[in-house]
Length: 547
Image (cartoon, rainbow, N blue to C red; front, side):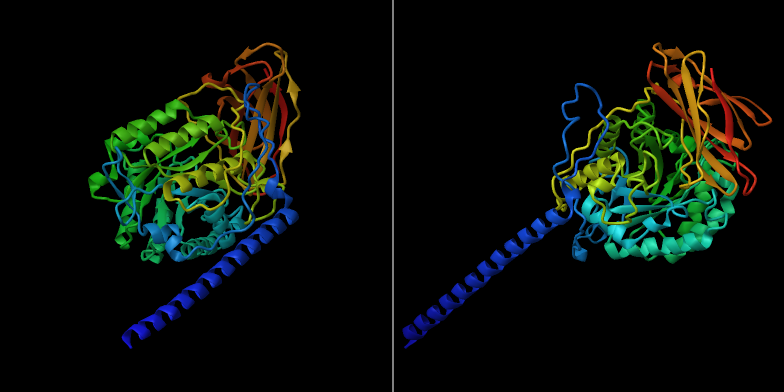
């Protein structure tokens, strides 16, 4: 009797197994066919998935320069379970010294090193539409990015100059979107080219508000002064960057918030090497990092060596802003140097944030100016910066986490910058301001030395402008030195890639820096400036002469 029962049960179990195998096979068959059908329909309806992108040719010997893109990001995103998101994987972040790296770095709640791959917005008050959940999800699922940086300008028509309500609402939207998607988010007080102590009380109020509001969030990071300039890190004056960072960091910690804090450094956050003489850790602060900013078309070993020095001294570094173009934000690319910077960052587990998530008509933007999408971008929607960032970041994501399921990286030609200025120890940085339809181009003047100059007011707000200039050598011989004269009704407040010679009334005279005075035949150099003007005033640049 027992044997017959056992035999009977064996038959029943065998039948169940057969049924399960049949069901599994059917599911597999239909999934594959549906997937193939979906893929075929996508190919038929969206030709951008196989588009090629015209990129600059780096040299006549570049064998990859004519290679088309054969794979592309798609216009759909994934929706992984919470356990697959960056925040669910890593949890609250901190800054610690671990054996793998020379200086303290970002680690997760398990003590493992984490590199944040960050999309930085442009000024949120100029491009608020890019702060949205769908866009963030595209960056996470398609680009391999795990963090978004919200650039909140205090000045330039920003938080302290009439746009607090808008910016408060976009901060709330951005932080909540990042939380729901399991991404990290940096709230960036985007100080630009001035001493942050000038707005110290306003900054303390801002960070007290948000440190209190988000003290229980494990995905929020604070960047307390983007690019202070003309102010030493520490000089015992009580009016230096160190003092500002100490005051603001204390406000954040007094709220019970132990999130990572990123401190800006002097000269547009290029002098991270100066921090070691007076770090905030000596005052008992933890989870503090210090920013390095660079633009690959301008900053070479001179600025890389600042990073190497800081790492050697044990300073925790965060590359909280960089670009693939020159420091104006709208000049030539140098993707080879950008890759070299990425190698340096990767070797030292330095997190990075690329400028900028918007469709402004400039080299640094990710999105083409002709594209109005705020999410679900395809390669035809992207600039060369966008293609490079997507390739680089999802490659890092695949290598580090093995989580990316998108196709093979697209091909982007890594062209050298067309501006062959010398690698210098000078600091150059643009004011990355609003998109404007009021751009005015000056007349082009040809000089006796065969050069031409053009200056464009590319960005304008109520009481200020940013202008970008180009000097081009149209002659058959190289030149050594150039001077540009022009008339302009505004008051120039800072200038980059050139220096002021004189200013009388509305007449300005500027000349080359030592590092960009040599201009070969057919080559060009760029410069730019920020200026103030009366509220609502229309300003123009006229009578441009280059010598």
